[in-house]
Length: 159
Image (cartoon, rainbow, N blue to C red; front, top):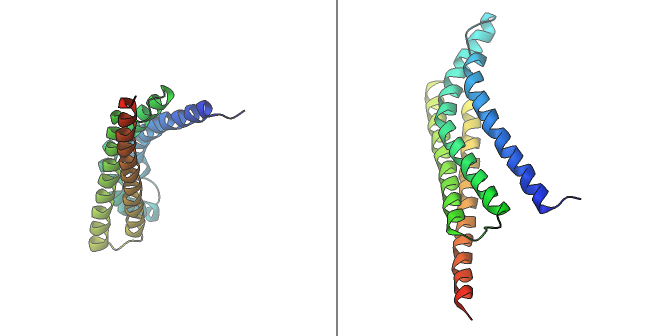
């Protein structure tokens, strides 16, 4: 039977798998965009690579910060620590990671649009827009948690 404990464990497994996948991507990405193979492939991948690799490496620290915060949130959830200021802080950090990702994507989009005018720029624009939307959702959830903590604290003081 599926329950909340199994759901948290599955989510924790996926988050920890993302640690490994992100580290693997950091190592493998330069090899994907190296200059070996036929000339058409080299030209396309070299041009594409110079606009993919730099934004990716700029986003890696924010990605790891968000993964660490999500992992800590899940650990708190397993300990049944829900409406706590630590969780609000973690949600705030994750939302700022999303906004950081959006700025990096929009900056890369502008550079690509000015220099090369590739369709890849549109993808970065969409990813950046999604990051802003996710950051806004997290800010709303953070504000709900802050308000819930105030109500919880007031109720705890009531006899």
